[in-house]
Image 1 (tube, rainbow, N blue to C red):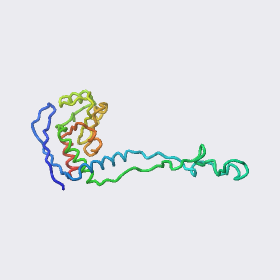
Image 2: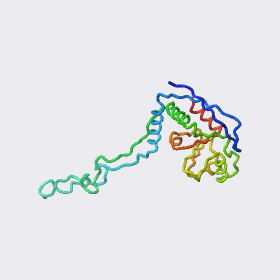
Image 3: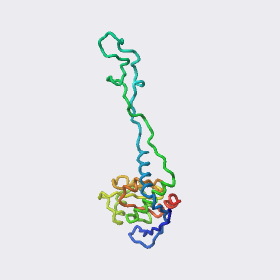
Image 4: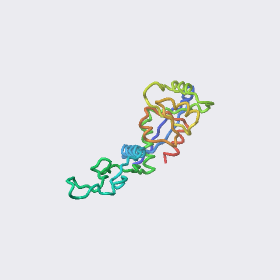
Length: 216
């Protein structure tokens, strides 16, 4: 059964003050939540597989069309081809072939999985007014200083997921050298990134975009 939950986030400004709150209404289906998250995760991991492992059968290996020796009279075991799987250089029996591992998942199921994860990460989520949107050039030091004001330290092992409305080139270049930080646009949100993150950092515009895309 789908019901609507309210999440109230305190919006943090650049000077680490909170002077307003934002209410995020989210639709939940408590009966199938964990099952849908699992399905979405398996689907995403499956699509990352290349499926390019491939071996040749005896019919695909070059050569071997001629019988190596006559059937009888040589005292040797009978053989019909030098590309038999029993021979060195021969084909492979039941070896892997190229395949597509992609799985289908309904759009609304994926939306439900993402909404559920955002709901579950509520206590580990910070909503900020903006994240150095006015950067004139890439500057990792500025990003580190601003994150430290929010109580987030880049030298720790916890993974941080920053969700913005759209990727700013200077912001992307500023955070790409920080190993425990991942920057993602709201319209590219995925299950694996949210599960791996210990903290979510979302801009107001990013949160509005999430509401617009995934809360249908």
